[in-house]
Length: 281
Length: 219
Image 1 (spheres, one colour):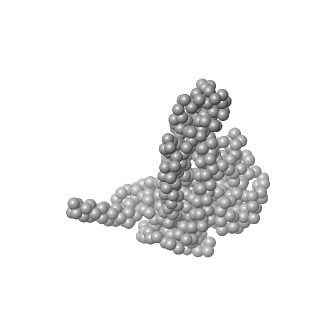
Image 2: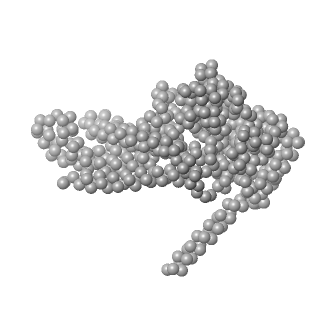
Image 3: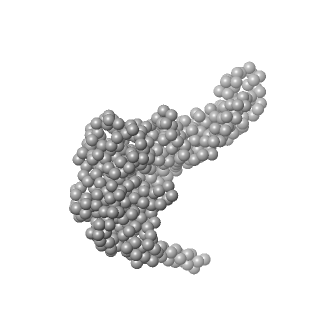
């Protein structure tokens, strides 16, 4: 009896050791090459990241990642949709090898993950009812108007900007996705829906609702840039990614990839990770 | 991944805020489920076939579809026909009506447990149907069903995290929002579990007491 328990315990210990070892080295470039794909986290927020009706992943961020991983010898990227807030914990837990979702660089995020050089840059925008009845042009305006409610993605940059500007928690509504945000704005549940400029334009273009309009850019909110985010211990992979990103930028292919989506290649090339990580402090 | 007590104390006030909403939603939802469940049970026993069939079908329909789908419907679809409820009200109605279809079965069992002779005696004493329900049937039917009802309310309590899907800022949603901005799941999610477990354990003790107090109807 005793030996059986010991054997079981040894078996469990061995299993944990193997499982632990696997997850620790999963984002090594050689391993990625061998398994033939890299797992990326996306958000389904066009034009950053999009999933078509046929399930095909597109959007500027995955497109860039796909090309770079291909050049690194990783044939495919496999995307999984995640909430913004769950991306970094998911990355740390080994569920993704990289985040390519328009997750803007902010000091606390730079502390948590290893970012590549900037890829997509954008300012913040509001979607509001036609004529902007509450006259909201900045996060501060929302904080000052005790009736104004703002919708934003949970764990996204906009939620934090609103809270930092002093909007109380009960007036910052966490909206699960773009469609819900639009619907809640149309139904009057929220007065403002905040996303980056290009995302708001994309959403409203699709909605074709004449009763909504865009306020962009939001007064006082900085321009943010995202990068592909890797685990802190995967700096080697990040550096390899950066080398190929630099080549893409220099050859002009980078502009060809992202400009059709409306992003400015110049904006991303005129700034650096170090500047972006320090900027908001 | 190590446990950080400082972080626990730092997030505790926020979680308590959410916990208040969880408790509030449970109490209101239980009230809705108790009242509507009784109405459903009585309507199902209606001698008018159209009423009892319709109510039976509606209850079956609600019980046969997921609560999450119903919540989405109440929250996102009803505004299209001009009914705009606040997240909490929508959540309480959704969860309350859903559980009412279950409590209705408890009521039905309780009512059917009252011997037929009691109805006949009430009739013989010249009581109206209303009087028979209020003074004869329900006082005998309700006590034995209290433990079963309480059981459903505890189950309902554990379903309240679903309300986070329609933006109610209850315990689960607060924990998610903390995890979102701190990139840590271990403390907030553990605490959510601890909160629910604490209430469930206390409730189970209360439930035992209710069972001893009410379940034996022959005393």
